[in-house]
Each structure stands twice: as C-alpha cells, then as structure tokens.
Picture 1 (tube, rainbow, N blue to C red):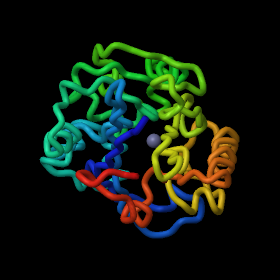
Picture 2 (cartoon, rainbow, N blue to C red):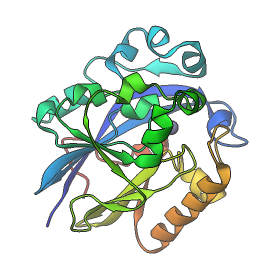
Picture 3 (cartoon, rainbow, N blue to C red):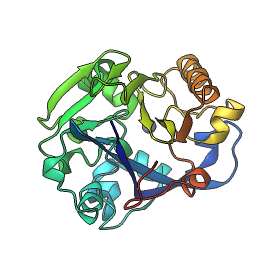
Picture 4 (cartoon, helix red, strand yellow):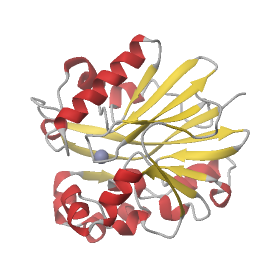
Length: 254
Ligand SMILES: [Zn+2]
C-alpha cells in the first residue's frame, strides 16, 4: 500500500507575527499550503488554499477586517486547480476534499474542485452552518457550503480504511479543526495545519492571539508532541522556514 503525496504553495500572506504567536515581533510571510494525496482507492486534497478572486481584489472578497490583517501575495497559477493541472491532474477527478477547518485560506479553493466529497469534522460543519458562530469564527459559508457531497466525521477517522490516511481531531484553533496523519514509506507525517502554525508553536507553546479554545489547542499540541516523540514528522501549518525544507510538486513527499 503506497501513498503519493505532493505539497503545493497556493500563495502567501504577510501579517504580524504577534497575532500568530504570543510575544512575536515584526511581520512574517506565511506560505499557504495544500496537499494532494493519491491512494489506490482514491485521491484527496488536504485543504485548498484561497479563492482565486483574492488574487485581484481580496478586500471585495473578504472584507476590511481580514485584508487589514494580511497583505496578499497570490497570483494566477497559484490556485489549487492550476497547481493540479500543472502536475497533470484534473481537478474534476479529485474524489475527496479533506478540510482542516473553515478559514478562508484553507477552503477557498473548494469551489475549484467540483466533484469531490467534502470530509470535515461534524463540529466544524455545525459551527460553519450556524450564522452566529460562523461570524464569530470568521467563516464564510460561500467558501464551503457549495453543494459538495458531505462526509461528516466525529473525531479520529480512517479515511481509506487501511490506516494510511487518518484524520486526527485537533480542535481549539476552531471548534472542529482536524489534522491529517499519513503513513509514508519514510515514516509517519502529520499535516498539522492551524493546530500548529510554526515549529516554535510546538516547542515553546506560544499560541496565536485568536483561538476558539486555547486549552484545547494546548491539548492538541501535546498530542502532536507525542506523535513526534513516537517518530512522526510534523508539518507545521504556516511556517516559512519549515516550508523551505518541504519538497514541492512535482517532487513527492516520501
Ligand atoms: Zn485558521
């Protein structure tokens, strides 16, 4: 049973490190990752990056609050569908979109993957469908309530039934955030997404300013640390230094 996994950079955002890591200073340029996972039983994306209209006019798309927080560095050809096409894959043939959570830089490309089933934690879906909690969490249903078939899961979930791709509940950043554990030839990899923005988040337990539940975030970090101790490689959500070490498509992660 062998997986093929590819990493894509779907643009960058620049923001204040202090918002993203307690005590951080200055500004930081964040990679926006998405991953393609090819399994004999199907193909999956883990996150889809930002909407392509953010390439031209993010303020019109996202509103003043988000565009006040971030500078956008996102260009045609960097959206998930273009990244897939450049790798020789058809966006229409992707079977699954596994979203870590519903923030705009993780679900913005869902609209470009029209025939996939969306696999998310039920808690995240419920938070996204409740107008009050969606507004509080900064979710926009137009990013994810697009008529995709839904596969809602509760907690840990074995995606293909053979233990090679497993959703791990890492709630806290949002109500139903999840990470993804992959069993590769070179060992286990955990795609942390926003449960852990940076390597320093894990090492120093410095949380972001904005979080749904900081206690739950710390529990999630403990879980990542335990997986790392057991030999897994943790892929941090938006760490620019770490990201430089990650092979990009067409080179596979092994
Ligand atoms: Zn987020």
